[in-house]
Amino acid sequence: MNTNKAQNGFSLIELMITLAILAILIMVAAPSMESSRKKSAVTGLQREFISSLALARGEASVKGRPVSICPSADTQTCDTNTDWSKGWLVFLETGQGDGAYSSAAGDTLIRAYKNEGASKMKVVDPLDSNQKALNSLTWNARGFSKDAQRALVVVCDRSSDVKFARGLMIASSGRAIKTRDSDGDGIHDMSFIEDNGSKVTAVLTCP
Image (cartoon, rainbow, N blue to C red; front, side):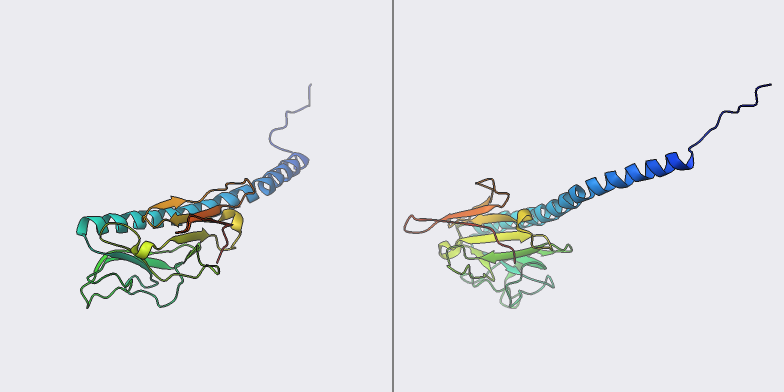
């Protein structure tokens, strides 16, 4: 009589080998997954701001009045600091566009955005040697940047790793253009033209 019986399932050694291979695959995939998560978070916030920029510029042209964007943590008032990471307000101004929202003065809130993620953002003057931080952006009644103000918007992940930084370049025309990695070094660059025609370029930096 044949006493050999077929064995079903995994042996302990086979199970250990399978778990070891799975652990290796997870270790290999984890950095790529983390990188994708960071890129997704940064580009998501960038898209939100692009939407607000387009809204502000369009409303200024349609209503024939200045429209401003300011940083806001509570979605009700403009912050006195220059930290745009928590959110911002888009509002129609009653005056000439001072960049400070006041419902009492007759300003009309168009949109309030609150950033629930961990991505960080800054808005600076790209033509200033120290890249002075800006606490508002304003479009005039024609949809152009007030006083031909150029601005650079930089969005970064929580680690401030510049490889994940993405930017928006706001020209004097009021139009916003995405930054790109122009030299292939893995870091996005900004490029602006001064009033005298000279070109200002630099790599993005994180707040």
